[in-house]
Structure formats: structure tokens, C-alpha cells
Length: 524
Image (cartoon, rainbow, N blue to C red; front, side, top):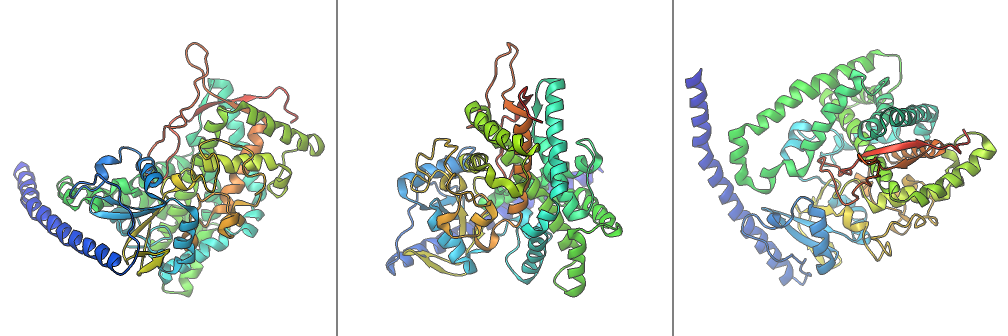
């Protein structure tokens, strides 16, 4: 056995120089071609896309980006303009920070900018060769799958689930209050994931978890957390630096990733789907299987990946957004006081919390919710796009195959769109009380924020996310205030709003422990 292991290791190591040499040759060819393309575009009269100084051979700008690339790239864009070319190793990204330009590229020209760059784990291993709705290119199979998801997640259907959503919000807010009372504070991450994930269980699978220690929730969230982390671009280092494929080869990285999918994720989701199909409850998975019977574009693997993505992406982004909201509001008790005043005015008349259909009676709370999402977006880059054909935009030439990135952090800090963008201004959106779904699908002039993406790849679950967040927020502030945890001396320790966690596809706050203190003046 020892001899066999040594021989295997020697085989891997002997292959490493060949892999490294191939990577370097490919890099040299690609770099020469890229330089030729750029030079030819300028010669043809196109404007040159500015590139930050300091790039080094092969590594490009990677050594300059530190832990939070969006912050450094935002600095460059303040100096060079709203569109820059950043060399991520051997992969050039064109990064956009102006929302009007982003809209023009991703929405107006969505027919050729809705592709996805190929990442080994996300597209091949997680998505089982381009299945699902998050990572495939927009082919016929993707369009059919996305259409089915959009139908189930449409506002008219989500509104039918109103009572269920309200019960889930009641349950989780009661948990936040009770745990604070018993333990002094609570880390909100898992409870918020539970609340947002549970409704996705209901809509996608026709089932729900009963509490935060329910094996259904524990098993799914452990798989989701690991999968979301591995889908992040930072985990696919060989995509940026092909020479590192040598290290991946030696360490058997891909084999371990495939083992996680085949031994952990797939058996779990196949079991849940089987239970959902055998139940008498309606669910998205049944709709997808009906679609499978009508067309040869869907298969079992594609349905499983889609359900996995909807539950994972929906729960992580929504819970991360709420975590940021609570962290921000601990710094602003005066904002909480105004939310409470507005809520109590409604409750004093109706003797209950307001429903989502009554949201316009709470303009201040709606404005605060949108401002929190602008002030600290839950993702810095969203999912990347790729040009599927050559594109000309505002005098710039963007060749086919270019990776296109919306810098969500920078677009929400754009002073031309959001004056005094570095400040948290709770009244900023009082003149735009549209639902987030309506705003995201309208003209760029009436959009509120850009967290749900652009064009053909815009998030299909916008309305669900907003309803979930609204229901939780009105209940929290109807009963309590959100305060910082206390240290050993009994002093509040406010969360650091400039400290993010890299969760792969999302960037939740680092400090997520708070106190939900019952209001003695609560009217309920």
C-alpha cells in the first residue's frame, strides 16, 4: 500500500512540470493575442479602456487587491473612470462602476452580454456541466428552466403564500427575542438563514423545517454554505493563474470537489426531491418535472441543480442583507425610533402589524430598507457576465469572450447617482417607494439599487426576498429594538461596518451578534 501511494505521488509530481509548461505556453499565446486585440481596437478608432498601473507579469493586478478586491478596484475607478480593465492573473476583467453604463451593457445589450464565464467548479462540477439557472450560458435549456422558476416566484404566486411567510417571520422574531432574553444576545446568521430558507423549502419542495436544529435545516445549510463558498471566484485560483492547476492536480482539488457533490450534496437533494414528488403538496419541483415530461431540455440533474441554487442563493443573499440591516441600525437608534413611531401609528389603528400589501403606509421603513441595501450591498460583484459576441458601447470595443463585472460596491457609492454616497441617509428613497421588483425591472432612472443584477440575468426571486425582509423587519420593530452586544464591563460593542466576511458569492458582515430588546411601549 505504501509503495502504491508513493508511486501515485511520483506520477502526480512528474506530470506537474508538463502541466506548468502548458499553462505558461497558453498564457504567452493568450497575452500576445489580447495585446494584439487591444492595439487593433485602438487603431480602428475605439477608445482605450484604462488599465491601472502596477500590474506584474503573469500575476497582473492580483497582488494589489488584498482581501477585498472591490474596495481597491473602486479606488482605481475613482481615478480612471467608470470602466477599467483589471488583469486578474491571465484573466482580464472589464469592471463597470457607473449604473447607467452597466445598464447599457448588461440590459440594452443583454443579447450578447448575458453569458457566463466558465469556472471549473461552478459551471462543471456544481452545475453538472452547465445545468441550473445561475452558471450556464443562456441556451434553450436555461431559458426553459428559468421561465419555470420565474412563474413560481412571480409576485402573484408569492402573494398567495402570504400567511405562510408571515408565520415564518413570527416564528423567527420570537426566536430572536427569546434567545436574547435567555442568553443576553444572539448571532443572527443561522436564524435568518432558517427563516429565509424555510419558505424556499415550502415553495420548492413542499416541506418545512420545524426549528433551527431540525436535521432538514442543519443538513441543507451545511451543504449550502460549503457549496456557496466553493462557487466563489476566489476558490477557482487556476482560472486566474493556470500554473496553479499543478497544485490543484497534486492536492487532488477537483477530486475532492467532485466527492463533495457526489457524496454530500447530490444524495441529500435527490432524497428531498423524491420526498417532494411523493407528497400531495404543490411545489416548484413538481412543475419542473412536468416540464421535463414535455421537453427533452430538462433532466434529473438539471432539476436538482436548480432546486439547490434557488434554496442556496435565495437564503444566503436575503439573510446576509438582513444581517447588514441589523448591524447598520445598531449604529442609528434615532432611525429605529422613527421606524417605531411610524409602525405604532399603524398598529394603534389596526391592532396588528402591517401586511406587505400595506407597505406604502410605512414610507420611512421602506426607505430605510432600501438605503441599508445600498449602503452595504450583500455582494460586491454579483455573478459575472461574459460577452458572447463582439460589442461596441460608448466608443469602447468589447471583444467576444470578455469577462464583464458589475462592481456592486462602487455602483452603490457612485456620487452622481447617490449624492453623499458614503453617508447612511435613511430618507434617501422616500421618493421611490416602488417595490424592489418593480424598480429592478423598470428604466434605469427609476431603479433604487442594483443588488438583484441586470437584464436577462436579473434575480428571479426579487419579490420573495423583499416580502421576507419586510415581514421580519415590521415584526422586529413592532416588538423590540436592535442593540449591540455588551462586553464584560456591560458596555455596548457596536459592529464594525467596514469588516466583511467572504462567503464566496456573498459578503455578509463580520459582526452578526446583536440584542433584540423588548420594547416596554410595544402596542402588541
